[in-house]
Image (tube, rainbow, N blue to C red; front, side, top):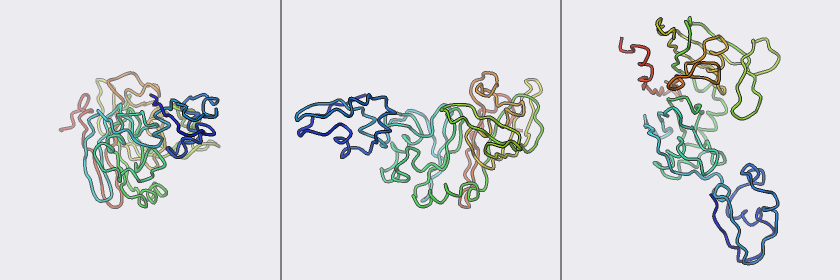
Length: 286
């Protein structure tokens, strides 16, 4: 979407003309796919130009969110949400809607979004994949967000997920080196811990129940780090991918069966107990 702007005075170029209206940079404009000549051409007095709304509203958050996102808790420091699956954690541009940050924008004062204001993720302490449901924690204080993000692995004591994997999985610890290509939406690779490259990743996977008829195992996973796709790629490397995770070799299903259940932050434990998705295959009521 574009909007028309008419300039009362001549301008060196569109980059310079927008500098007082938006914080968008040349590199960001390039990501929007606009032609370089259009942005660098001089602007005459009275000339009108069409400008992408994403450039004009760079780093602003669109408040449109049609997803049903439940508020689990709110304190003076945190907003705790239950993110549904097939919902992004945050936008990448103003035109992106239906994400957790847009939901916060629609429900809370603008001051809440001043945390980490130079990034679209704002005060989120971590992200969940588009396909993953569960607990999302937003920090309302800039200094606390910075402190927690810089020492996330030590200050955030407990990170628990539930997952259904294909196969008969026995409880065990997993440690790998994760290797990323750097390409957007690319797969991670889980290598042996002795591999020369990669990031060390460890988790504890506890078997909760096994569905013999369907050969599926319900796991409780305690995460030590929190790297991109960490649980997904480490479980797939064991030959037991998460049900519905076709990116890592699983068969298609109603959804990806991974749910963020709890985090312990600043001495508080927040939980998203919405485990109804697992009742398709397991009797969680005993």
